[in-house]
Image 1 (tube, rainbow, N blue to C red):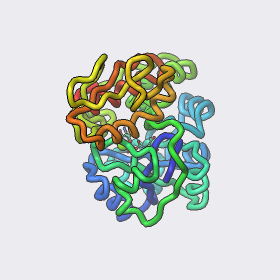
Image 2: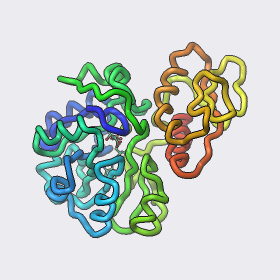
Image 3: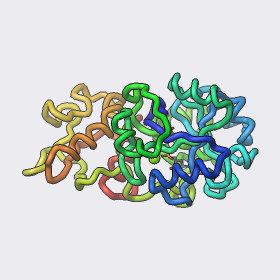
Length: 285
Ligand code: TXA
Ligand code: MG
């Protein structure tokens, strides 16, 4: 299933056998819960308990690249396995018209992790998704290249509002709606998928590289980088986000000995880009 962020491997959130097949196809540990994708806020309210902060964020950013972690309201509609046994559920209404149409047609929530195998970069084209987990899919929808290219922002609203995963909706955009975000606690516990090495290509990744070393493929940004594999020659962070995972894959396939990535500014979307890069390189963010 295409979404505006990355391709997902989607299935019926209520069906434990189908959900188990998704975990198996990804090689994903069963302690890492999935996001339930809904067509609109009405469907979301049937599976999760909304508070005023959740209502305000959904009104501002849905459909779109924001996931809310809330107390679960219907443990059958999003089965225990999909939630990794937690009493919470992650929910988002994707902005891509094909994803929206699919969920509407099914009429109930679909869980959809990114369609990569566990630990690998998320796929941003159908071809990349097919290469990762396509063998397990009964059908595939081609929505073209993903416009955003980075996964949704995950915000926990269980007590204080916390940023569990930086993403396409920036910290500033969220704080403009609900006020200051609290610091994330031990992030492996709060958002169980946040492992140190994640989003990783096969080759070693070196960050903040102002020049490539011999044998390295160089992924540039702005003035730092050649014409090949420059995330955004104009220095535009949205363009860089959209290209990031595809360029990591291209560098991985290039026959180089390693991947060097130019420095990326940390503000706005840069927070999420740098988060993914640190994990691709094997550092906890
Ligand atoms: O953009 C996206 O969010 C994509 C597209 C396909 O929608 N999906 C995606 O799913 O990135 P996935 O499974 O790759 O990442 C989901 C993240 C994981 O870090 C997981 O730990 C976290 O959301 N998560 C899911 N349920 C949670 C919960 N109940 N509490 C805390 N974190 C949760
Ligand atoms: Mg993922």
